[in-house]
Amino acid sequence: MTEPCLLLTGASGLVGSAWLPWLLENYPDRRIVILSRSPQRSIRPKNNLVTIVRGDLTQRNLGLAVDDQKALSQSITEIIHCAADIRFRLPLGEARATNLAGTRRLLALARRSKYLEKFAHISTVYVAGRQRGMVPEARFRNTSGFLNSYQQSKYEAEQLVFEAMPEIPASIFRLSSIISDSNGNVRQSNYFHQVLRLVPRNPFPVIPGESGAPLDLIASDWAASALAVLYDSHFTPGRVYHVCAGAEASMSVGEILDRTFRILNERRRAQAVPPRLVGLDEFERFARQQAKSASSSVKKLLGVIQEFLPQLAIPQCYENRATMALLERAGLQLPPVREYYARVVESCFGGRSHEV
Image (cartoon, rainbow, N blue to C red; front, side):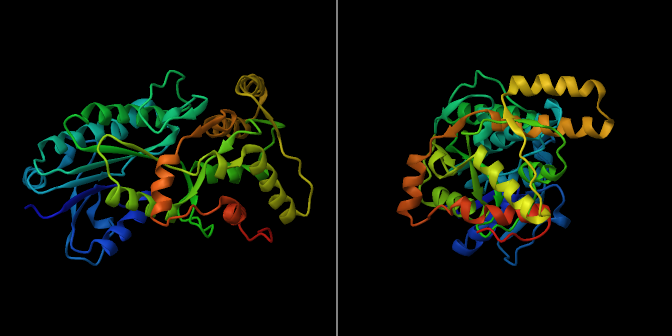
């Protein structure tokens, strides 16, 4: 019988770096191979069963040396694919180079790996793009389009994984927005934190958003534990798992805006008024009008808002009852976002809030 050997991509990213310690602690005898473009700068766990191999998702054969290709195809029993380019503003071709082509190359390695038992593809609930309403915990056809190249390239990568499922024991794990750990500590900034930092200097009276739309936010430590439990104890080839809060456990866009401005006004001892939420069409008309006469700095700010905020104007939620039932059975409870949200906002503004 082949000894368990796990190939991990994205070990230095937010998800991978949170998941790796769990893997090492709970399965200390499992060999782990980390694929890294910069082995000298990679995480180096103090475990002689962990190997770091130079590779690159954007290169032919994953940029692996011939000997490494052969060794991996003859030894790996599991693959966890966390690596992704999460930048929203990339041209589509550049986003595809990592997210789509990289997944295709990893699937090719999986096909050559005769002992493979699991292939976990880490994706995002935002493959739903502009789709409104409930997103199923399953394969679906996106006919509504996307808001950015990240969403589109991740959706396309999912299609590759679905198409490979008859040959490869693969499952897809879609995450929502990770904003901090469950104590509100922000270790790695993403688009959500960039938006928060815009709040004090937003000069616009309107932003895109729908007040009652839920915004699904989760904690990194819960997400890593959830992924670990699902992967190790409930992995089912062909299945899709939504690792997210769900509509009932999420704050609405309106509530988030109110809470954010409450914290800002407390810090400033002022009474700044939140911008009015408008639909996408109305905001795009407003943006076009502003762009005609705005300064370069305002145009730049407008571009950032157009890139990150339109998601708030799409009433979208994610089916997760089946996944949450598995996690609750394992005793893993979702940390309520309302309990740590204020600390996340304060970390972006640079300080602490009295709000709990």
